Image (cartoon, rainbow, N blue to C red; front, side):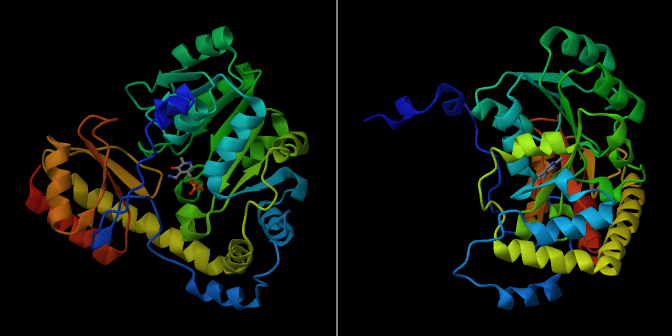
Length: 343
Ligand code: PMP
């Protein structure tokens, strides 16, 4: 029996998301926080392992709603925001429009679900190419538009005016993916939610020290949340993740201190990388830096030889690597290895 022949054609032509574990000493490849919340793990002892999780993640929603100043029925929990992308495309279908380069899961999930993808390259400033996006909206009428701002892997925020133009022109849903919003100097789109019925904001706890939990959430009008909730698997966020997230989110001072430390380390790292000749740096509002070298494959391997793992993006963004901001010691080791590697 040829299993390959049984697979849907959309899936058989897909390439799995590249999330291999590569052994290394210093891990700066996945935009994780270098700081965890191990104290919050204590609550694990109180979990009843024989019981299903709270299907509504009530306590978690209460904490998030209070922090964000919104109603609980404007929130939907996901097993990471990856899962929420799946739910959004399952609920609304395609076409699905997004700029490129961007977070690869929008395209992978759209394709897996057999929906049409509309990819529009960013302009030379790495901003949204409104001259191409607006006509595409008119012609293709996408049901969903994903805008990661700050964008992964470029690191920049798209201009607010352009995002608003897209929201106003679209008769579909526009998702502003704010995975990296905590590190940005921009305000984000939460304050605009009341003005636009078709706006959805997507966030995650993965980048602020809780990637192990797999917890993302949508913020949107209750009528959108209620529809997406229909395709949600009943117990999609496990009890441990719910309890640990609630506990960690209550450590607000610590959360804020970590984010501040990462931002100031990022600025120092950027300043030091700028001094390396031959390297092109892209401005960032996230917890990572995209940079261009002469030969990305060579520099990637040279760094890995020294035990430092970064993301090699050369297949999607020519000769570019992406480094996640680590602890001061990790960043120092990265800089030293990068200088030694030569550009
Ligand atoms: N959106 C963006 C822009 C991302 O970069 C990522 C993680 N790389 C995600 C969403 C997914 O995050 P998670 O599933 O961990 O919540």
